[in-house]
Image (tube, rainbow, N blue to C red):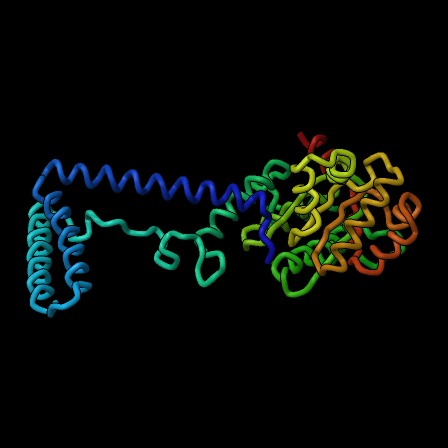
Length: 331
């Protein structure tokens, strides 16, 4: 699983901010308790002093430290008992003055056994959903809200199924499986068809599910992606462009939307081939959404690229009538 550096930096910032806020609240709580019972603050100071003397006595050479250690231990236990009694009189638990980690698995470090802890993964997931929400309506575009009733129940010319059957049995079910089985193996999709047939909706549903599982997802239009590649090439000192291109090439799932709406140049063809080829070689999953048919893609881009896509991508044809127009007419 690859973590998007840009998203992880934001997650860590929020993680540390929340941790700092908890520390402030703890200090405020401690000060409030000390104001109510000043003796508790004295006990805290004495306990720290006792520990220092225990360590010094244990390291002292030339004498038997056991009598001193026993005396200090008794003193420590006495202070702790007094602390417990005073807190109980205030109806507070014994550890009311202690710092308790929000995550017991990693002790609020964010990492466990060299891996990202699930608590930090939660921050990462929330930040990634914020990033995706800038491009997608993740609040309403889900698998549950994908309405198949908008697709006609008429037989597709030259096919044995209706548009609704095709969209349900081939397109919708494939997207469901794609989301739920993501990570088992690299899986690439080419979603193609006229505008308004649900390509963005199902792309958003996939992105939503996969990001909630902690995978890194980058969703952007083809035009914006190629712009970042061009900026990196001609502005060598643009660190943000370098970072963006790295995210595009290395994320767990890249969703490239609206391919074919950009101005196609030799540079764009080269950048697209680099994206497709690099991610195939590194076994990273990609979804390409376009209004162009595979035949028109081959005409617009290089035959070599078209061959790579048709040979390595599962082709999902979106059929039916423009749902946006149907919804507008129904109002």
